[in-house]
Image (cartoon, rainbow, N blue to C red; front, side):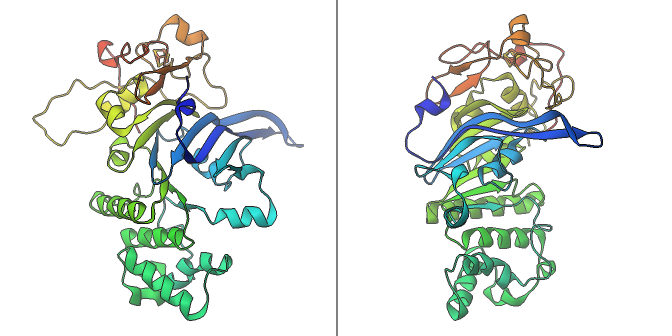
Length: 347
Ligand code: SF4
């Protein structure tokens, strides 16, 4: 059994998604290799559900999110949206379907055109898709600004007149403007102050519940996705290595990599001592990934089998799956704290 075979009725179903970037050399640009940024990734997101996609920088999570939306064309795989393969659409049908799938970018500074007013930025999608014009357009944009916690009277202001948190609210309003069903939230709070992060996460949660939205919430920090996500998928070197409900993953992480990521989250209480564990070495290159389990060069529990054989999915029970040779069916079997002399990942 795999995570996707236990799938109820999803809004969006990503199957065997791959994105390989060619490495070219020489005068004629001969392809000499590939960066395997996303390597056979499958997941689903239900209606009104949030899936957190988490991993260290460079694990391929942002590329996966953008490939789903075809902001980057995937190398292989399928993205089934309400029964239709989004990757096979072309021309007018593709343009019309794009309305349902939106993105909120990481960088609230770079993602807004500095020459456009806030009203024009938020209203652009409605104009492009022919959803509103004239006074109706203005009214709907002002309603949206109010909805995301901005002053509707700032309709004619420019992005540089707003703070980072306010700009991200503009990005949220822009994504919502075309009434999407699914939004990729691409590290939407990692460029913001910690005090503002909670406000934006709460806003996203409120909007999800009000408009019955589905999110793919991409983040490098497990503590950020905990509050918002119903389920979490952990990625390492282009592959998903563990997936579970949010509660299960934080309470009982099975994969050694997930355990190490959770260990790296700082604890607010200085009196509370923890048996923290850090992983040795750097993330290997996705150009030439390790044999067997991709995590074996850094895993404190690695055995000979891990070096030669890719681990299968293990059903840990209750929609919890981990790809590790040591994890037992039903859970248990892999505990990095049992290994001595290791060091934490640096997400
Ligand atoms: Fe570690 Fe082996 Fe499990 Fe990979 S399969 S995570 S190397 S124990």
